[in-house]
Length: 79
Image (tube, rainbow, N blue to C red; front, side, top):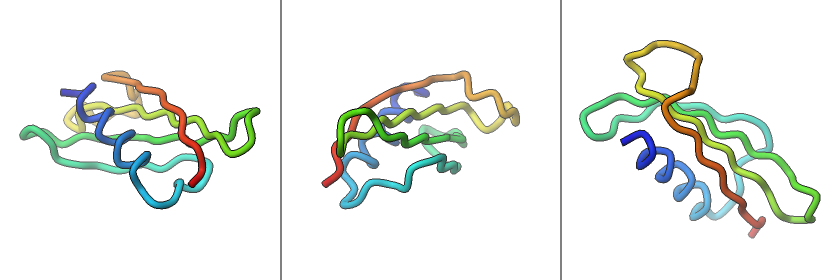
């Protein structure tokens, strides 16, 4: 489920009209009967207009800052 949730965070980011600001965004969301915490890092790459998306998720019940359940990386071009 953690991989599925991380994929959803990436998909939502890639499908949004605008790229989130560079830096870190965090949040909590319910999915599959569980509360999840996520972190999304957006960084510029050496290629103009191309950004790296790194998302880390874990079940909120663990109440830790260790985002170790799943990590997913992607690239997005600025629209």
